[in-house]
Image (cartoon, rainbow, N blue to C red):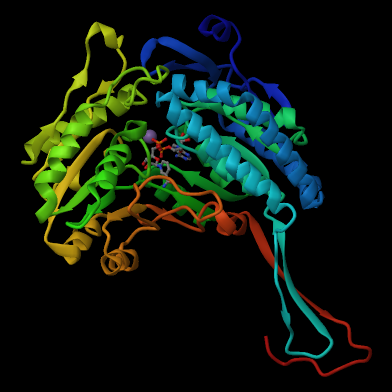
Length: 499
Ligand code: NAD
Ligand code: MN
């Protein structure tokens, strides 16, 4: 594959055509399990490419927006069918480019298909509401109108699911999109573009521009033809985009970092809690925004919890994600590996106790891949960096708590607020947590991970701002609500003197 791709770089998709960047430059991505293996060559786009994509989207948006929503839905159902056909290929693309285990990649493709299905069906709803007017013989109702052109800027850790859970609601609502995937995962993005092309989405409605955010990001935010930005990524970049978009009063939806906690109370079912935390902390190599990076364990069960946690973590196998036997795959890039190793060093310096793992795996059998052992820290000072900052790797920090109030205090002690979980059989304790956890999503007796596409997804505090993604909220973000008043009375009448 690398040979063929080297000869034939992948292109941007703009206005229904596969085109090269005006920069004439390409760059390559590599397989994090075997960094010598090139996945493909891609366009290193510059602002002029982003402008062309925005122009194509602006040209296509009016007709797409006028198409009856059920017809747009029919095209999304077609895209769903093509996704199904190419799902295996797409999962493999995720694994060789991002690194995650093939089972996780397959699950990710399934998630993308779920949101396509859900959004396609919304073509027959997209409800507004009607309500009585205060005036006689007057109809009052709301309806949705597309925004126009929207920019979709996504991270590398879910190279298929996150883009699609933005695109599908954006498209059904009648918007044209410009999609900029993370610079390290353009291969999966290219296949997504091919799928929408094959599904028959009209030219210009779906545009793909690859390359670094630093070079084209500002154009995708500043251009006056862009009406909204849906962003998922780091809190740092999201904050910059939010501030920048405010200059031109654009809508922004920003899904950012996390430092998610799972609480284990004395009465918890450890047969659920321990595997749930192992999966939450180490699944997808810990590179999930909803990963469990903190376990908060009530004192009475701490010893037994730790014994079982370490026993189950020991059983995990680390290796190339393409081999279904491996539980933990490489980190996604050298930069990720370096960052995780640095945090492991910091943890030890800050006085936490390394209870398991902590090493990079570097033998010849690892072929230079970016592997690190699943790692567990205990006795972590609450104000330390590993207790507070997002590590984004297979590193779990464990805390002890004295009762539910203390557990909630520790859980809420971070700047992030994406997802959380509590293991308990006690409804009072569970509800105490549901009602006070400073996170956008709360799970009871289940891992901090995931969610369903017909329910809103997103976080509080430094984990996000703007309307939630998915569920009805997702459609709200991608549409304007227009209010209509229609006077159908026969004669003239007194006008309201108010606003
Ligand atoms: P990142 O912020 O570095 O990059 C995200 C995207 O922004 C990429 O496409 C990047 O090219 C682009 N970008 C970079 N600079 C830009 C600029 N100046 N203007 C516009 N765009 C720019 O994030 P990442 O490293 O790709 O992803 C990891 C982060 O994403 C983690 O913090 C993780 O928690 C977060 N994340 C959050 C969620 C969520 O839903 N809350 C989901 C997944 C990942
Ligand atoms: Mn980054």
